Image: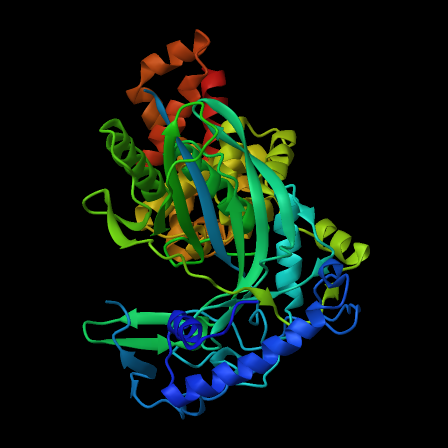
Length: 98
Length: 474
């Protein structure tokens, strides 16, 4: 398995459009070393490649769909409470389009 | 060397539900920004998505109309990207298990009928609306979470005309099924186009150029035809087409570069573990299909069986609301053939003149049906019917009421009318000879003249009867 080096993590972070401090990268590199070690142990078990990937712990389905009934919206003031900058009832950001 | 175009379309359609795809926030258009939202739509952590039943029913109906295989297990995936239109940092969509697969629809072009394959149809949620200004961007979450279906065609479309016909057919399907209002100008139906050009007969694909958000059928056709010409010229010069995203400039009628596609975005799709797989029973799917509103094609067959001709039927089904208006007037007892004629001639002309849609038309289907019944009974002439129609437009009341009102000013006194008839005949003595020679049209002429003399006040039915008697007497 590929080593999660600082360079690999930096590239991944850049693709996800964020960055971290050197200390944070170093800590994450160490955490990944442990993780990859554990993965390698699992990898030694025979026949792992044939197992279907799982998303849910149990193979169950349900038939629950929500009826199309609308609720009352939360208040505008409440919705915008955490916004740093508001203009005309909308959240104002630095220009997104270049 | 001869070239051919390979075109694939991705159409996003906003569904007409009361609440959002994964939250119960209301779906209402044109309201104040950030007033149609739930915490879920703002991406607050810990708020769980719940799947809207009506959106699923709508998707099943469209899948069925597009002859698709319907997946009986609903699963949703996360499309991860970081952008200001997306509160959660991911959009919930159906990447791995779309609800519909392997469909097709038939379009009619100038060259005849053609089958276009459809790759997939999936359910997802809309992103929020951004308004870009010169130095800032405003965010409105009202659109965030509105249910969407995305329909992806196979790359089997070959021209701008075929693409426009394909979109027109999809729009007809979603509007007749009443799952969307299908309005391109309002963004309820949005179309992304992939165009590439290759050597004719080749099985390889050329380099793909994406044209984003083209608005309106005419523009879709023009944008694609322009792009085919542009790429063909590049290839003819022996150069290579660049992989890029372009947009259509309506004024200049050309496509212009938006951005190059150097590094394709990796959305890191994975199944959304917050929505456990949902099993759709056979009965549920069947019920969604069997209770589905009538498609345009089915309506047309019904109209033809009522005795309407091909032309009138096609005009009626060109607009779902017009066909609904027709259906309602038929239910109110109007003769379908006469009614279709009136809608397609007089109603459509009035809509055009007033620049309104049929939903805003002042004459209700019930009142138009009343008018048709009056005409059918022969109570009034064609000229009078058109006059009555204009009065209905103006007064917005029933034709019978208008007739009743005019009856009070109407001359029904036989001797007065008789006097006018005698006067008219003495001025047109040749008419009597013509009548004796078998010209029946003279009756209508004399009646018309008498009505004119009375300033339209003489009772038409009575006048008609008296004119006939007088002519026979001579």
